[in-house]
Length: 89
Image (cartoon, rainbow, N blue to C red; front, side, top):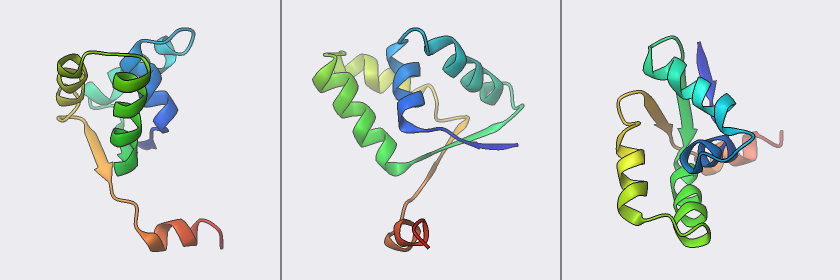
């Protein structure tokens, strides 16, 4: 099963933000175990970096370590101009 992970879910997971962390962690655990495939948009990473590092003052090295830890089971889908306009048709 393919699952698109919203940016807010990704941020909750990275920040271990309760009460949402446990649900987000389950999704990432299923992906790590190969039960599901998870996808995020390219914009997720820039937004998550801004929120986690700039707003919540997470150490950049910690953020980078967490992102690298997902590379084996998290796929990044590009968002094109056509994708944006297609969403409104």
